[in-house]
Structures are given as C-alpha cells and as structure tokens.
Amino acid sequence: MGLLRMNRQRGALTGQIMAFLAGLTLLAGAGGGLAQERPLTIVVLGDSLSAGYGLPREAAFPEALERKLKARGHNIRMVNAGVSGDTATGGLERLDWSVPDGTDGVIVELGANDMLRGVDPAVTRKAIEAIVTRLKARGVAVMLAGMYAQRNLGPAYTERFDAIYRELAEKHGLVLYPFFLEGVAGERALNLPDGLHPTAKGIERIVERIIPAVESFLRRLDARAG
Image (cartoon, rainbow, N blue to C red; front, side, top):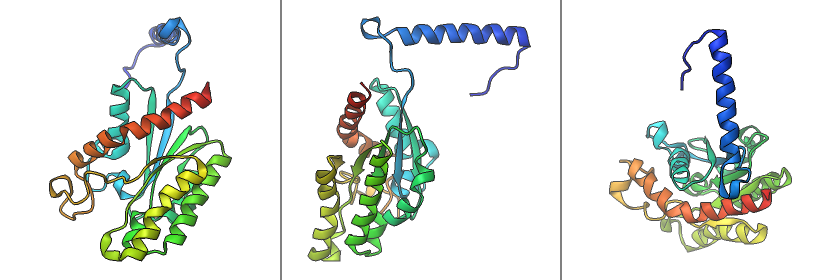
C-alpha cells in the first residue's frame, strides 16, 4: 500500500484525477444512483477464536470474513477486536475503546473462556447483555456469535450457559449465529494441536457457515441506513 514519491505538480494532478474517478465510481451503480459512499465498519469483539490465535493475521476470522463478503459484493470493513484469553466481562471492560465512534455494527464473539473456566453463566449473561445494551444506546447494531458449553460440565451448567445467547437474541431482537464453532469443534483436522483453536481451514469453514447470518445482519444495517 506504499505510494510512489512524486513532485508536487504531478502529485496534485494525480490526486485530481483520482478524485474525479472516485466521483464517477460513486455515481455508478444500480440505476445510476449514488452508491454507498463508505464501507460499513463492523467490529468483531471477541477472544482468541476471532483474534486468530496461532495463525497469520490474514487468516484470522475478521480478515477471512471480510474477503468473503467483498467477493460477494459487500462494501465492508471488518475490524479485529479479538483479545486472546478474554472473558465476556473483559470484553465489557474494554468495550468503549475496542468499538470506536463511527462503527456501524458489532459481532460479539465472547463466552468461550467463561465456559472453560467454569464462570457462573449468570455472570457471563450479565456482561454480554451489558455489552448489547451499551452498544444499542450508542446506535451500534449488534449480532451475537454464540457458544455451547462442553458437555462434561454437566447438564445443569450446559443448559444455563447454552441458553444465554438464544435468550438475549430474543430479548433484544438480535441476529444470532448459535454456535461459532459449528462444523469445526471436535474436528482434529480443522483445529490446532491444542484441540481448541481453529486452523486457517477451520476459520474458512466458520466463515462459510456464518455467512448467511452475517448477510442477514448487513441487510438490517442497510435498511436502517436507508
């Protein structure tokens, strides 16, 4: 993305040409109407699963999702706000600086570390709901990427934990992708040796499966903007 060094006159002329071409691009589109002037900015507020633990930056979930969405014609900018080891409470504590002003939407992918540490589901639910309500108060749309508890934690815990995302989505009218690791969890070939974090191929499968929910989320953003 580096720019060639030019003299002032040539640089000014090039800038004018680029501005003119950009203007034509904005005027182009269905029916000759104004196209979307700027990409929608979506922040993925998550933990190591979205941060891209053990992977090159370009293989992380937000980057892979951005490429897929752009290939499908969406004017989108994904921001990776994943922090390895973060709990839902940790995500809440850093919410304001992780989701800057100008953000159109947030995909919340938190809770896996709560579950692995056996955190009371009531604590996790409270933190995720606080994230949702604070973002909505700022006019930022929210989508939930849910998590399921490991079954060895017992039926009482898993029932309470699994219900968090469904109940919050229903209460707040949110788009929900029920299980972020759908089709990847338990698949050795799609996980790193730790058995917890997806490989690059695992991330690609997550992207393929979550796309319908994300596009539903984007349609809501488009409708709201219109």
